[in-house]
Amino acid sequence: MINRQIATTIKELSTKFPIVAVTGPRQSGKTTLLQKLFPEYTYISMENPDNRAQAEADPNGFLNIYSKNVILDEVQNVPHLFSYLQTKTDLDRIKGQYILSGSQHFPLMERITQSLAGRVALVRLLPFDFSEMKTAGFLSQQLPEVIFKGFYPAIYDSDIHPTRYFPNYVETYVERDVRSLLNVKNLTLFRNFLKLCAGHIGQVLNLSSLANNCGITSPTAKAWLSILETSFIAFLLPPYYRNFNKRLVKSPKLYFFDTGLACYLLGMKDAGQVDTYYQKGSLFENLVIAELLKQRHHQGERPQFYFWRDNVGNELDLLSEEFQSVDVWEMKYGATVNPDYFKGFHYLNKIEGLSIGQKSIIYGGDLPQLRHGVQVRGWFDL
Image (tube, rainbow, N blue to C red; front, side, top):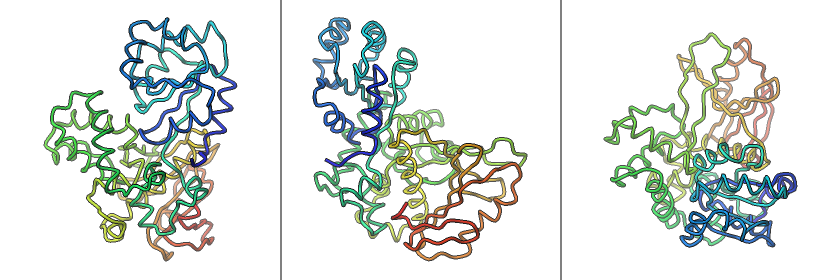
């Protein structure tokens, strides 16, 4: 098993809180990691109908049987259990009493904020990040291959080709989440919507356009997009527009947590097709932003990520809000650094009221350099 960065954080939190909750997409390695970190704990899956029925019929009796040192997997499937967990942990006052995991973020978070506020530590486990891949010797130095394969553990643990893994992933997990959270009657339309979202990676979200192209209503598109967020398939990067007088774009941009899944939805069959894709720059931008997001979450942090774009097209790919400053990142797929890469930073210097920290360009090459006060780094050393 590959060592996960977040393991130390989870163990530490289990000594300070009665409950630790680990969220993340299906098949990101949550169960494997928790069973390795807590081998003495009893593992209970709430996907199992018998366990679920027992917890629903007699929650107090269920928690009396599983009174401490318990991993409750996919616990969002038994929503009313959270109130009983609150009572149980308040009475027992045991650190690390329960470890919860779930792959539907919003339902799980809703129950936690309603019933377990102050009693639970929250962490997020996403698919492998670069450092984890490097440690295991899995990170290819071929950029198109990295984008195409993505980072889901099963692809590497079981040596499954992406064209075999992702169709089953979508059918088995994504569509099941759709059925459990929304009464979607036409899965063909939903699949088309999913593919359209992959084609809009790195673009400012236009729900009306997505809805029209898919043949659904805007409210339906909004609901379906929320499912993709809930299931950790896609995420929205908000714009950074606070405290400025400029007319700025105020809609978020759309990205996927995993570029491998996006490549499958775009119809790619091999890594060579990444290089010929007309929006390969957007896929690279997605790769870098998702990687930076994973790094922060796997270190137990809560990233504050944004993008910047004004109404005349000036744009910066990623802003990371730090203490009293903002770090700025630009992503360029090309392997040769050219002056155009710095245009956004030249414009950045004209913005009043923005305290800039680190300025970085991540590009498709491998030679680190410093130009115009901007740190240029190759993608492999991200």
